[in-house]
Image (cartoon, rainbow, N blue to C red; front, side, top):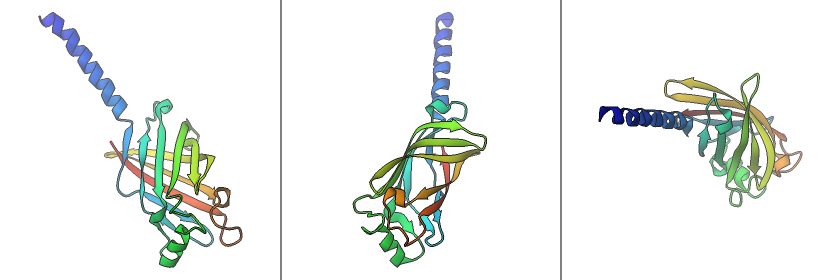
Length: 176
């Protein structure tokens, strides 16, 4: 009887180990994330983000990012500017309530990683690459990235009113 139960026990342990390894790459976005934007004129943050993150530094073929930012959570520090930003003239948050990024693949780079996928803003979807780094810590890790977005390429606002290029800085802590 002991002889028959040993292979079953070993199979169960291996199976559970594999599940743990697979599960460890599925991250939950933790509190304390930051999505900042800046330019010559408007600066601020988006205060609400949600999504799914799958990332294993040892197996990038399984990596995926599917995140959404709530446009209505924009905060420039100026109430009138916030209302203008979500209006029909800019983001049109009533029609397009989210900014989304869905990765198609993740590649290793000299500086870290690139998430290559589709960015959707204001009803316009474009191929987009987000460079990022990942630093593991005791509770999970932190994804950080800095990149530029042309608001005019996505039909946000008018030319000449404010800077076309928005500099983005993103910091996203995650936990298992």
